[in-house]
Length: 146
Image (cartoon, rainbow, N blue to C red; front, side, top):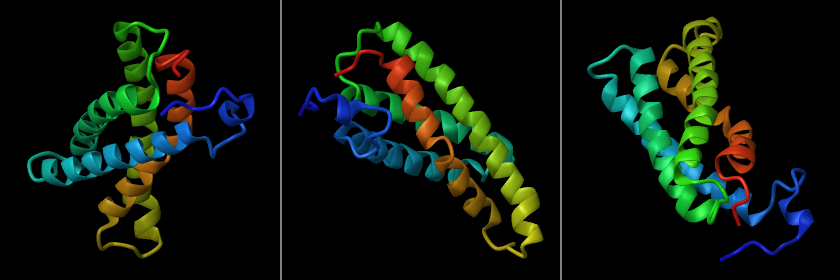
């Protein structure tokens, strides 16, 4: 299903566009992959390493689903899409890692939250780059997508 060619729907000020909704749903699924992978990887790796590798699993899922379901028929080549997707998500990784570490190692303990602090911190950290990533992918990764 294509979005109607309405500037109001696709404008930066319209967070209710069907493309944005699809992006949020795809991102939510990719976030679940990310979160689940982090839980499993924490069995073998330190928290920062597990968060980082889980992010890779999440962005691989997100790329495939965004390309297929959200940003179809981009004017960028597949190679360019992948390159920008990595750049945008490296910025998102930095945001996720910084927020996750800040919350898990500083804020939550000071608030008296010790049970599942890493899980809470990581879940919040995953959500932080949602808006910046949407516009990064819309304007860079999948430029000109319908």
